[in-house]
Structure formats: C-alpha cells, structure tokens
Image 1 (spheres, one colour):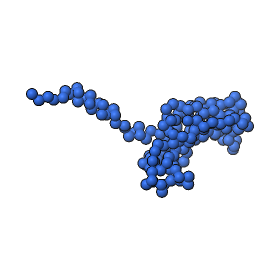
Image 2: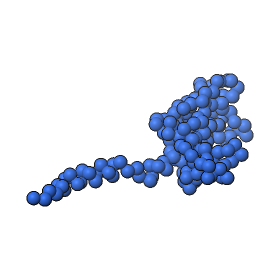
Image 3: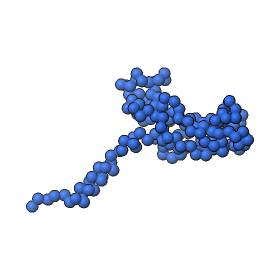
Image 4: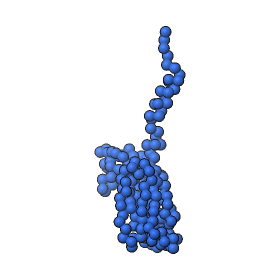
Length: 166
C-alpha cells in the first residue's frame, strides 16, 4: 500500500516554508520612530517663537570590496542622496522616519547592515539659526527599529549634555 502525505501535512509544511521566507519588503524596510522631548526653557522658547522641529536622518554602511569605488570620502556608502527631513510641532512629540529617500539599489553595495545617523534642529522659521542642542543617533538601523528612541533637546544656551543614543 502506497502512503501519500495528507493534504493537511502538506499545507502545514508549505506554511512553515512561507513563514521562514523573508519578504523583499521586510529586507528594505528602512523606517523607524523617534520621540523628541524638550527642556522647559526650550519648550517655552519654541512656543513663544512659533518655531517647529526638524528631524534629519541619513543612512550609510560599509562597502563590500566590489563596491569600494562607490564609497564616499570617509570610505562609506551613502544610502541617501540627501537627508530625509521630518518636521514636527515645536511642542516636541513623535516623528516617523519612512526611509523613503534610501536608494535601495545601494543596499547591495553594503558588506554588513545599514546604519543611520539622526540629528535634530529647530526648523529655522523664526530665526536663521538653530536654537536646539539635542541627543543624536549614530549606529545600527536595526537597533533603532526595535523601539522608538527618545532624543532630548534643550536650548543651545542651556549647554545641555547631548548623548549618543542606540
């Protein structure tokens, strides 16, 4: 008597294989979230000046040997031709960085994971100068994607200690 696998067993096996496959969109998801907080003085100044906040993100990584010719002056691959900018209210809050400016073709040039650098400044609507001194991010994108990172800002004149956040 021949034994044939049941259709249920075959369906389960197919489901397991599909679950193990990584969809292409997951491989190129470059988005993450940042929470911005303000010192009392910074919050008061931005509110008085009706100023907004800008989160700047740039993506980069180390090149494969075969892609070294594409590296920038510091030996890295720029994944964004220009920073992605996300403007939020001057009252601080949540910023979603979509990663939409990442050149996905350049991901193939990386020897390892993508990194991200995030800086924050005032939007310069009320003054030509930046008013804020803020924590920043410079490291592995996957670390930043795990959960929203909180970056704290104060006025430059407050001389706040800024911190590198993971």
